[in-house]
Image 1 (cartoon, rainbow, N blue to C red):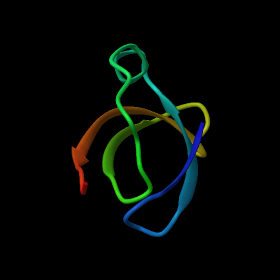
Image 2 (cartoon, rainbow, N blue to C red; image 1 turned 60 degrees about the vertical axis):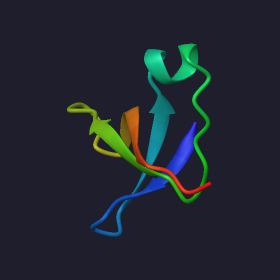
Image 3 (cartoon, rainbow, N blue to C red; image 1 turned 90 degrees about the vertical axis):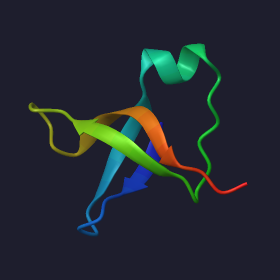
Length: 55
């Protein structure tokens, strides 16, 4: 479970999707991610991929 800050400065809870969990992808605080926000609860979403990574 991750606290995610969106581009519009809102904060939501992000959960790692199956592909992110299965491939042991590390999510760092500096990463830009793609997230799908739940249609039932707009304060939660699934992290589906990492767009930008700084090592």
